[in-house]
Every structure is written in structure tokens, then in C-alpha cells.
Image 1 (cartoon, protein in one colour):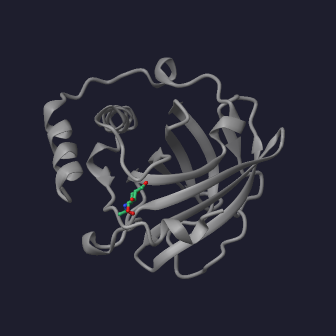
Image 2 (cartoon, helix red, strand yellow):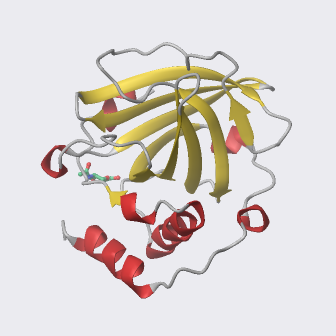
Length: 197
Ligand SMILES: *[C@@H]1O[C@H](CO)[C@@H](O)[C@H](O)[C@H]1NC(C)=O
């Protein structure tokens, strides 16, 4: 059972050819941010940031708590298991003209709760690509002023996802050219629970 999802992921990677798809036609055009708010597990990650994840045996589920502050502001707390351990971060983002995107207007990506020699820093943009409010695909831009890393997250209200959710995640990995970095996280919620509201 522990091996279930990673094996499934491998099957999905091998089963699909590389068919370039148009990202903008597939993307969600509106998001109900009140419905999107609350606690999410981060079940899978794909990132072009080198060294984003710790060694295989140290990986854990991530989490995110999303709150609408004002109609044009979103507070996002994230927790990730990183090579340095479990790290959480909180950032307030401003609504972009696009209805599905919030951006960090401060160059440094908000306050880091825990520090360390992180190659990747704050959240610069948070974009919902697809959601039915029980799962979500979120495209994060992470980094500092001039450096931006692209990261795709599979969010779920529960600590397990459906096959279809995982398929959608892999489809978007394809579109974003992040397939080789896609990782399904082991079901250890100890890091995720550090940011339970
Ligand atoms: C996953 O969630 C269920 C209930 O929602 C819980 O019983 C189970 O212990 C959780 N698994 C882990 C590994 O946290």
C-alpha cells in the first residue's frame, strides 16, 4: 500500500507520450476563493528548484492553509519538508488582474518563519490551475528577486488523492515540462500538522 501511489505515478509517466498541450485553454478561469480557503494537504510536488525536497526517506506530506483577508488579499501558509527539516512560511498576496492568481508585491516573499540556508525563498505567485474544492492544482512561483522557480502542487482536503487527481497533476506536469521532477509524497502528516489552523 505504501508503494501504491509512486508506482501509479511511474505508470502514468510511462504511459503517456509527450503531447504538448495548450495551458491557457485548460486552465481554470475563475476560483471561488472562499470555497478554496482552509486547510489542504500537499500530496505531490513537481519543482524545477534543485534540492527542493529532502532525501527520499525523509519526505513527508506538505500542507497549505489559505485565507481570504480582504477581497483582494490572500494569506497563504505553507509547510514543506525540506532538506533542512519541516519549514513553514506565511505570506500575504495581492490579487492579480487575473481571477485565479495572487501575487506577492514585496520582493522578498514575506516573512520566513524558520530560516536556514534555503536555496528557495518566498512565494512570489499563487495560481490555481484547476480545482473542484476537494482537490486543487496550484502553480507556485518561488524565489527571490531575480530567480524564480516553478513548482506544481497537488492539494487535497484529505491525505489521499484519487487516480483522476493524480492524472490531472501529471497532465499539468507535462504542460509545464516538470514531469521528471514529479514526486508523490509519503503519507507522514507530521510536518503538515505543524500548520493546522
Ligand atoms: C489519513 O487520514 C485518515 C482520516 O482522514 C486518518 O485516519 C489516517 O490516520 C491518516 N493517515 C496518515 C498517515 O496521517
